[in-house]
Amino acid sequence: MGFIIARLLFLGLTASGGIVLGRALGLPVSQPVLGGAGLAIGLLILLVEEALRRVSLQRIVLVALGSGVGLIAAQVLGGTFLAFLSGWPRIAGTGFLSVLLGYLGFALALRKAGELEALTARLFPPDAERQGHAKILDTSVIIDGRIADICETGFVDGSLLVPQFILRELQQIADSSDGLKRNRGRLGLDILQRIQRMPKVKVEIQELDFPQIREVDRKLIEFAKAVGGKILTNDYNLNKVAELHGVGVLNINELANAVKPMVLPGEQMHVHLLREGKESGQGVAYLDDGTMVVVDHGKRYLGQSVDVIVTSVLQTTAGRMIFSRLREENGGRGVDER
Image (cartoon, rainbow, N blue to C red; front, top):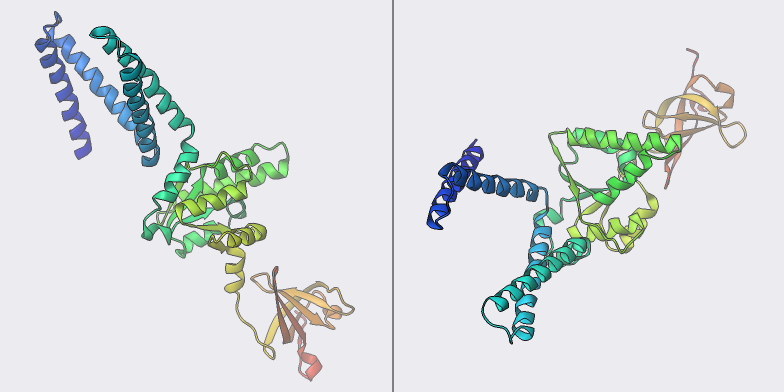
């Protein structure tokens, strides 16, 4: 409400200023017209201010610097090449150069903003508080969907950064002619919208880009370096490449493996055998978290629930595998006929 009142006061001042300035200049125009002109200028300024709210501060500074360099160059060139002129011709010539070179500096800064922002982000890194908490989502982890469930539990808070080039890749997947890719892309967009609606998490779409780099994964690594954040992914290859570049990675596959319950050799479990194993006579069951349980001599009990004793646990890059034997082999009753 305070902001609305301030804007109304600003518009009132611009309308009054239009009348006062018009009278001071002796313009032969009525007060309502002068006030309307001042009000129109005030509305234009508010529209520009509203548009600038959507532009990053870095980009505003870069464009201002580009325009400033153009204006300085115009003054130098005007003093050098227009020295033979005097009076209004010299003022007009310098003004023309100022408009020309000022616009040129503005346009170049705007077109090269992505590359220049990458430079300024390195020269002026984010504050220490953000460096340790910024998390950057890649395409694979958005499509995977588990990140939304993790956010809902409250284990992930703060800001999740989504670079514009990641969002663009997601949109391209959603517009693919391949039905499977199209469904995965649309799922990813739905997941992103779901995370945006969560009160504990803030999703920020970042404009920082690296046009000179074509590979999205490499762009993501350079983005993480620029903002001082960590990449949230489930891509094994991106994980390794990012670590080689000294970029922190949060891999949700590693998180999923870490929160699985620990089992030790000798522990007893009750499992339901679903299919045959690779080796002769083996049966395979799965725990609720998806962990595979291989049961020696379990083939004959397919479709039944049995008690087993853990013999060993194998941790692989794909997850955890549990090897076991039937409890009845030790003399106990291990088959549930239900």
